[in-house]
Length: 387
Image 1 (cartoon, rainbow, N blue to C red):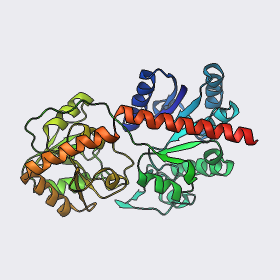
Image 2 (cartoon, rainbow, N blue to C red):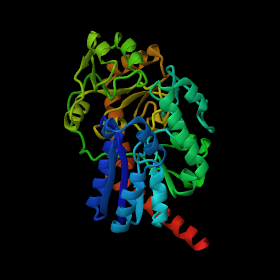
Image 3 (cartoon, rainbow, N blue to C red):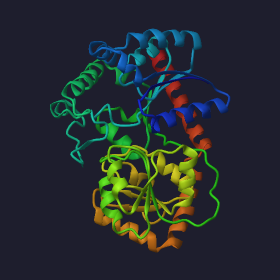
């Protein structure tokens, strides 16, 4: 197959960019011809506010550039990851005009919630689920800005009304069952929403001594860093934090936490192979934290909040431990148990690696991806025949 991958990259490289790169490399390694159309949010600095608003609602540049690329490359499928804000939903129309089916991976809940993770004031908020997020505008949920939230909501309103999301996409990829349920509750057609998790390609870990906990990710309130800080006082061993973010100064001042900043992937994996457990204390609805599957691949059990997709990924007592979101007491209880039960924790780590080999390897993911592409192409052909 020939695949065109489309992605609007964020200013700060994160999990989405890693997934896009990994899937492109996976497809290329299996003999598929892959091309990419990518914009970067660093371009925003050169745009005036009116120009940015216009591009967000309908990107003339996308229509032109992607249209030319489709005519030249003639792909079998267009796989879109993120369109906000520079690529815009105009990419779906360009693909439809070229007769190419679209597959859309939904890495977060931006189509349903301006804040993208159903979080407000540290608690889940589904006020906009299933309706246009005008309440989010009044609250300035996107970056605390009324104007920016209004622009985002206006884009959603225009393209919902125009059928951009409903009529021009053949398959939507949700990263976990929880995400699929929310997307369907938000109005997407259930028969077109499929679950395909992320993957990593890592060798089996070697046996060795492990000790202490690890946090990997953005050091922010929504990632539960406050809960972790409060619970860390009662840990038997220091917790290592790998990542950057606005809450990092609080981590640096904590007596029982070791901050290393953002590290290259190889060093993150080395830390995962040396620590006894990963902590994911998120307050927001998580889609599919890449750190979880990386931890499983490294034989590392995960202690996580019962929020979002995390209970879909982690089986309590088997591949990790779950606790009540936002409760530092509940998290401290699990951390103390982990620090005093190294044997049981090592067995959880072995089961976590087995879970990875069953569900999250490149080969498993490749088969899932090709099946989704085939379904999208079949749906496109069926609709064309019916017309």
